[in-house]
Every structure is written in structure tokens, then in C-alpha cells.
Length: 65
Image 1: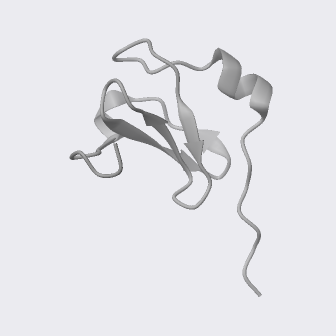
Image 2: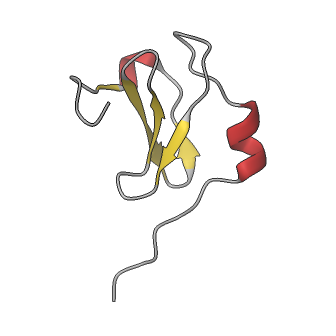
């Protein structure tokens, strides 16, 4: 019994920006991450809470972008 992936409130996604680039973020429901294409970073979402710390972000290394 796998749990359905959590979703991010669209209103929250409208107001959150990347702390590094100040650009918009996109939501990746499979990876449970917020993606900043401008900064090339993926911010994790843990227990439904976006972790908007540059030190906690994963470098995208050009994958999919």
C-alpha cells in the first residue's frame, strides 16, 4: 500500500521563489522537489514542507533541463 504522492498548494507555489536566483519554481511530484531551472537546483519537500535552503538543495547537473 503505497501512499499517494503529496501535492503542493498552487497558491504556495505562486509565492515561493528560489532563494538563490529569485526565479520561479516548478513542482516535481515524483521526486517531491521544487525545481529552480534558473539556479539549476532542486529543493526537497519533506513531510509536505518545502526546504528552501540553498545548502539543502540538490544540484541538477543539467539533467532534464
